[in-house]
Length: 233
Image 1: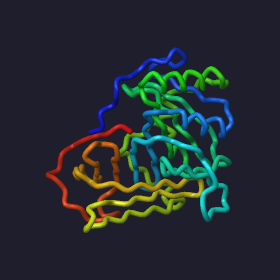
Image 2: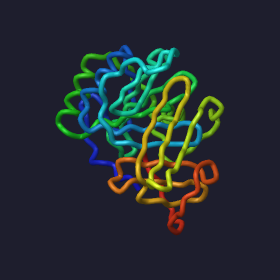
Image 3: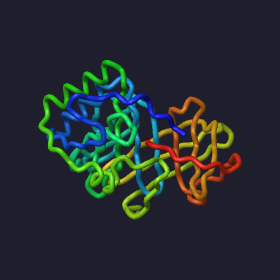
Image 4: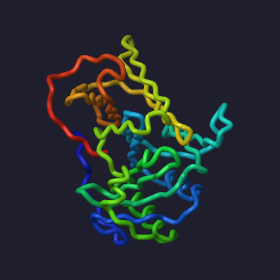
């Protein structure tokens, strides 16, 4: 299970609260580059990827003419024109999380700022410079925000084009989660593989990469004895 870091209360956001930020996509992408200890969650088409990462500058994505902007540090490409809203949620025992809703994908992307002084200051500055509107926390949660890693909804699967490739010689797995609104690619060496019902969970030794997907929809892996777990993003 991924252990959530200690929750840090922000003055502008109470526990079990949600706000929508009024800001330009470029402002939010610039904010991501200020984070020092970010965690990213990408959900789509029956796959969920958790990755600890830094963000850099989003530039033109090579070979793309559909509006995607790519950040090489995080491996994330995003179409700013498809960004519907950015919501900040705080509740359920989790630290504050930015939940990003994308046209055609729903809340497919989430970013946790770290709990260090720099990340908290950057988050406070963003809130102070942006207008906010209060939202009903449970309504946003039902819409798909703050989904657990093993909540593998597939109702929008036709809009996704995902790939999983296991290199047995290198012992690594490559994952690409892709839609018209975003593409994320990552590669890691699984050190832990377990199963809960139809859900497979792969994690590297440091827990910096965690991947959930349904058994039978990806490569074959030897798994440890079944044990029940529920992982939050």
